[in-house]
Length: 113
Image (cartoon, rainbow, N blue to C red; front, side):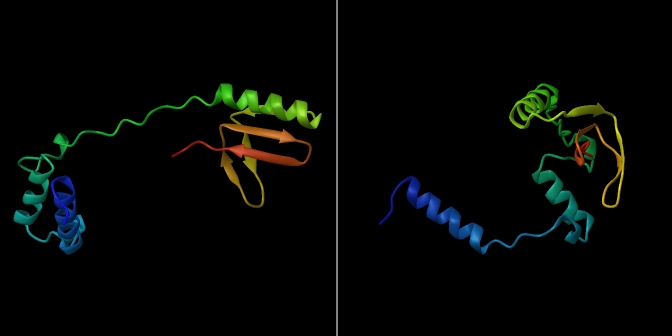
């Protein structure tokens, strides 16, 4: 027979199994919506109270240059790096942050949207 934290964990798992989740778009009335927003700390329907997600910036320049140098040494091939390159081809079109060209192969690192 479980006791202490194990017993609470089993009880919580059973509650989660029995609880039916609903998508936000299924809340049909204002009352339903207000209840769920209040649950997440949003009062009076002010969605500006929801904290904004701040993405963590990643600088890949140093890693990219190091990788290119390693590939140059391993392959003995000339590899060029062009920033803000425009790629037009059968499969890929559009602007990319970097294009790495080695002979006939083209690798594109695209900007995340």
